[in-house]
Image (cartoon, rainbow, N blue to C red; front, side, top):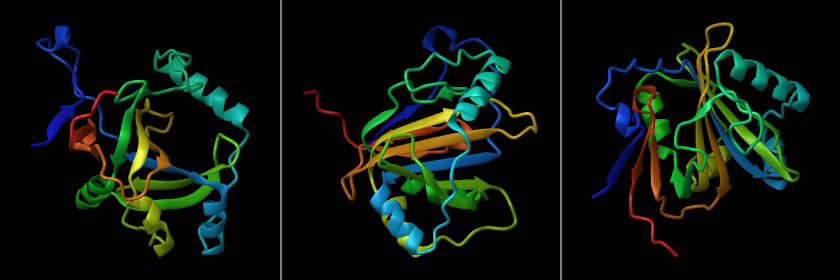
Length: 205
């Protein structure tokens, strides 16, 4: 029987009144792949979109973090303006977002952006899918299926502060494709609070 692991307030605050976090209006799922794989996707027609200057990205992260009262240097992976839902370590040892994609479609989220962009590390690229509750949607190319329904070694879910235009964006980062390996965790949207269902217990080394 699966173990359900929900994000929740820490134990000492659990009995105190809390305000529900606002649900995101935009959800971004980022799949990190090899450059060679990205080249094949480009040849198949997936749009390539070079990122803006990374220094400018970092500057914006710092500004948003300070505006939201968040320490931009709190986490080891660089400047951050949001909060990692599953902690700094994220989810490890096999993660699937298959159920998440079905869940998002069922509640009205549609793919309104799909492109490739350079990854942060040399030799890496990223498939970026953007979901909003728009009346229009993008039909995804069949060649993406291999990646969208794969199991990934690591996943980080970030809840980001409101942007200047009122947009609330949450991001799911997936790293290291391990194919059709049985996932340890199934990521769920859970009305914007996010959860992970553990399909089997982790065996300590």
